[in-house]
Length: 251
Image (cartoon, rainbow, N blue to C red; front, top):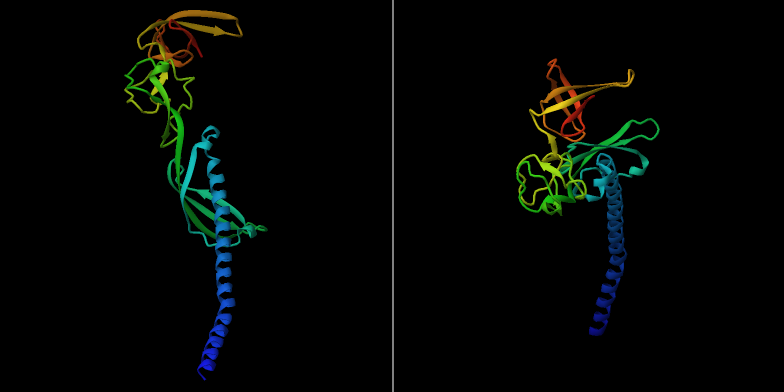
C-alpha cells in the first residue's frame, strides 16, 4: 500500500509539472518577444532623433557629440506603418532637449499620433586651450596654447580644433589657463589703432583713377578687417579695408 501511495504521488507531481511547463515557456517567450519589439522600436526612434538633431550641427563638430539619457514617452507602435516627423525644441547645442514625434498617415499626411522623447547632448571636442594665463592684448604664440578635450557648452563662440590659425592672434581680454580659445576672446593682431592717422585710398574702376587723402582711424583693426575712418579734409566717415598699418582702401 505504502509503495502504491508513493507511486501515485510521484505520478501526480509529474502530471502537474508536465502541465505547467508549456505554460511557463509560453509566458517567458511572449515576454521576451515583446521586449524585443520595444527595444527595436526604441532604437529606430533613437537613431531618427539623433539624425534629425545632427542636421543642425556644423559638419566638423558632429563626430564630437554624445547622446544620452533618452526617455521614451512614445507609445510603442509599429512606426514603419507611418511617416515620422521629428521637431526638436531647445536648440542649444549642449544640455537637455525634447523631440516631438508626429506619426503621419503615409497617404494623406494626417496626424495619427504624437508624443515626445527627451534626451541629453554633450560636446567633447579637442579644442585649443590656454596652456597658461594669457593677458589682455597679448599676442598669442604657439607655446601659449595646447589641445585639450573639453565639454564645451555651445558652438557659437567659434572654437578652434587645431592651433594652425591661432598663433599670432591677439587676446581681447584676460584668458585663464585651461580656458578654451575662441573667436569671441581672441582677434587677429591689430595693426591700426584708434586715432592713428592713415592714408585713405579711393579707387575708381570705371575712371581708372586712384585718389589719396588723410584720415583718422575711429576703430582698431587687423589686416583685411573693415574699420571706420574719418576723412580729415571733409569730415566724412567711411568704411575702409585695412591693407597695411598705414593704408586703408574705401570699400
